[in-house]
Image (cartoon, rainbow, N blue to C red; front, top):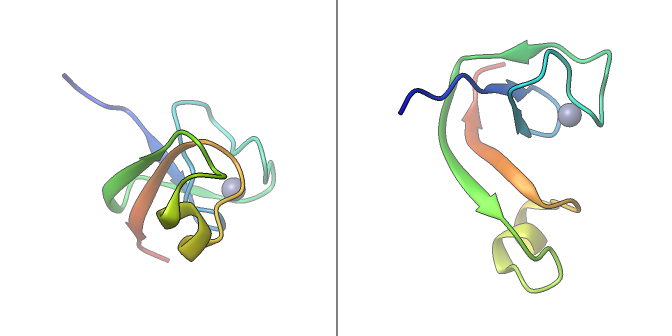
Length: 64
Ligand SMILES: [Zn+2]
């Protein structure tokens, strides 16, 4: 399986689109490592700790 996902430098959201849906002006990068999948934002401890407010895939590390 080949993932062609790009990470938003601002919110670390991983997307297959050309722009981050949250930050259309922010640059996306392929220089990211590891990811978490947040399904239920209210139940997710990781989401709370990282400040994620929307479900989705997020990179753990993004090179700035
Ligand atoms: Zn973003």
